Length: 173
Image (cartoon, rainbow, N blue to C red):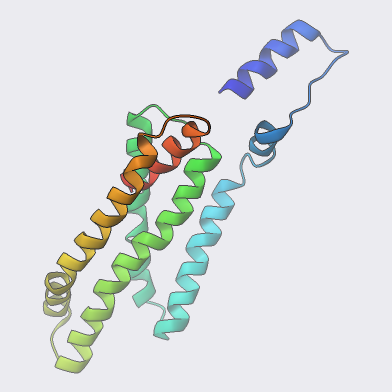
């Protein structure tokens, strides 16, 4: 928002004979504009392909990857509610959320596959048994991660804005 405002003021004030150039983090943000969606899509594709290779099936990784949109929605919602923008730090957090949400889904899918193929349960029974069995470990690791990221939200000093954006996105997801 600030970059756009500065560019608009410079255009109105300086006229057509002059231009401005960005440097530092402003240059990074201007040059990376629009590439976050590609990075996010590539991250999703890589996670899917790695899981497809691991499970030697195409359908099971789909169940894992479907957990990612819920994490992304929660992340966007909390960042919006706190009034932050979609900056490079938040986008980095989104890439991290792909891995974290997939990890939790993998835990449930692994145990559901074990219940189904080794113990002969139906799909629904295996999914419920896996969810019951892995609920506490997933909650414990998620809470540990959340409490570990919580200081980022309350950070002060130099660079705290980047930590606020990253931490808010991660906790929201």
